[in-house]
Image 1: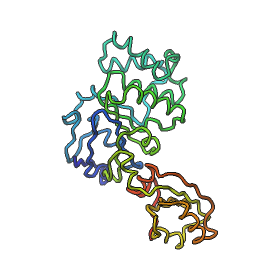
Image 2: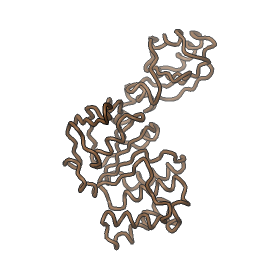
Image 3: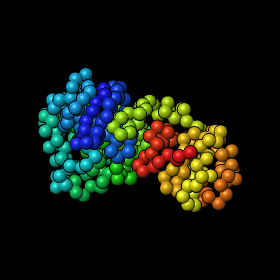
Length: 303
């Protein structure tokens, strides 16, 4: 609780406080630089906090606790010359898994992650999605109590992503704690039991996706403008029924009670300013915008 970790003059974690329920799928959501990867490093005892208290399984992080964790880091560290089976065998030996257990567990994991027919193929011949699935299989090889996933589906196509999560949610949910560090809000909305929004090394909101969306306006309106925002657009936040308003260049994002009322008024208020409009139900992304204000370079409209 209240964890601080700095790199020079920059505080990567600044009073970071979060509690992750055992057996849950917990998401850490924030833009790049918000502190997600730093927190993962602290959990794995690769770094130590400067201030605050951090507990893993009720104890301070320590190298010996890594045997109870499985970690998939953002960067791939696989040897492309090894076969999938050789890679898992080597990982199992590093974690001290007996050979008799590995002999049964490796084929089972490869099969469950859709890699059974590629067990003898060099990693270099596998697709990016297959490599990520292989990394998750490696992280599960020693039966960890905590599975840490740092951007596990970056660069993975939707079909590969679905295959990975179908395996994890189908057999691992509830058996172990899964912590997902990501900035993919749609993914977190679909798989996480609880999430925490991070901004500048601090947790600014936590709860289930449903809880975080509950306080939002009912609909999200995405507006593509013909040019830079002008004072007519800046006034819309004061309208009745309008919630969060964010801007990314010429893309305007507004949560509203009733899009059918808001959209005609927008066209009447700013004729010629709107190029396109899309309407959808409010999502976890909308809750994120409300608490964070931006995903990458997005800024809140000043009114």
